[in-house]
Length: 57
Image 1 (cartoon, rainbow, N blue to C red):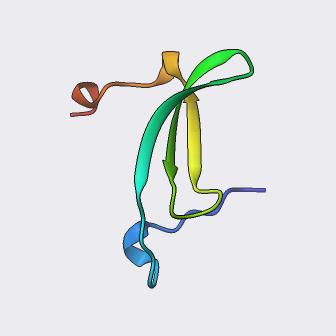
Image 2 (cartoon, rainbow, N blue to C red; image 1 turned 45 degrees about the vertical axis):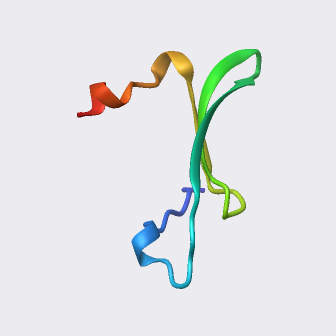
Image 3 (cartoon, rainbow, N blue to C red; image 1 turned 120 degrees about the horizontal axis):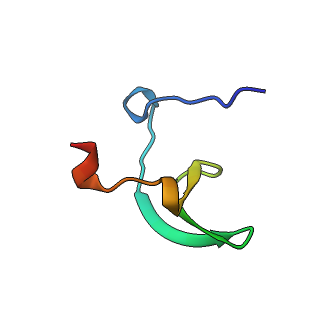
């Protein structure tokens, strides 16, 4: 099953508050990004695979 994604700008009446944190999942450190205003709206990547903001520019 493919995950469904709707861009924030296309959601009707939606508000969002996106936060990021590091957490341990299965004994490994992960970067977790979540929209805390929506259930199930999060993603996690191993910290070793995450990039810095400067690297994204």
